[in-house]
Image (cartoon, rainbow, N blue to C red):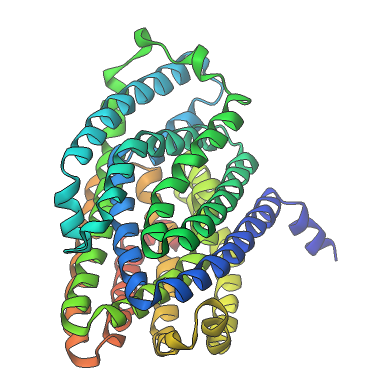
Length: 424
């Protein structure tokens, strides 16, 4: 009994509990949104939504230059150093402001080009890119503000911002999808993050006053040089990754059709719901701890905490999901999406390998191991792309998830060998 009481009293348990509430809420909202999408846009519309999501992920990370993990690290290290923290916040804020204005202008005047690349000849969706260009600056600043308070250790506030974002996303999606169908679904994806910025700014201002901290004379090029490693790592992962997925989805569309691409998008959408629990716990709780770890023993203990408490619960959850897959598809979508059940086994297996490797991957960010990270990421994306294309020829749409599972297994093996001193 004392053992369980000690677990309940740990900060990890408290954070995980609130985070679990956030994820459950996100999943609940996802149920509603997915059902509405299934009814009003169908599998083909779901494929278009997936393409826009991948593009948006890349653009968002370009707008913040991939600085978020670096911001968390340096703010965490200078939590009590007011002067140094002012330099970090001022430098990043001013840099992101300039980048946001340039990127927004570029996107606005090249909207037709991107519309053709993402949606093909569907010119009626051009407005989506025009709106995206106008609201893009709010994306980067939201991520920036969340990274700052994350670095300060305000874990609960970060999770509450995520909760508010989920609710905003739901309300926006319901209104726009019901009113404009597929175009509304696409606009909701673009507008919801912009609305979240205002809630994020209000909550962060109560914790740290940006108007008093941000100063032009505190701009420091040395900080930009330090952050450039994180920028390179994040941009390789968060920009190249979505474009690889976009290329795979376009390959499916051209060879198997929009409907099959929609099935895969539906599967990855389900996967993204439960993976949010892990990614949030990693960025909010484990990344700051790994950043502060001074020895292999400390790092090993952090890894052990993750593998002892997080991974087993995740595997148990996936087992429940697998045996409930027919119910989940009927609940989330419609009978039209039942072929998605054939994709569950390999997708869930791949997700287990992925989650087992994620904590190791975060060590690259924590210790600024730029070259090793870029090499492993490029290797990972390359084998994912070629595995998916190869297995699609043999197994059809199921080949995509087979390739995904094999890629994550190989990636886990590579990282286990690389970090063997910290693991064993």
